[in-house]
Image (cartoon, rainbow, N blue to C red; front, side):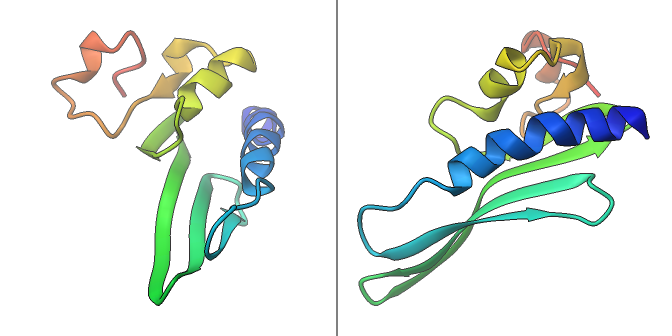
Length: 111
């Protein structure tokens, strides 16, 4: 449980900073959603752009077996960059959006 809280204390402030960034167009907002067990983190875009409904996942992180799995990463510089800067080592980050056979070439954890 300590590892889970350590991750929460790193991940939440990073994603909160992104969630607090305002959109300069459309009636859009970011939503940060954290599961009750603090294992899933979703950064969403929700709202309207002109007459088009926008509802999409920017980033999805999940804690699995003491590693941070990045299922979706739509941030410009990548959430892994922020996690590394916060002190999370590459062997504790899985780029799950890459197929399993490609992960050994990423320098991050495979699973």
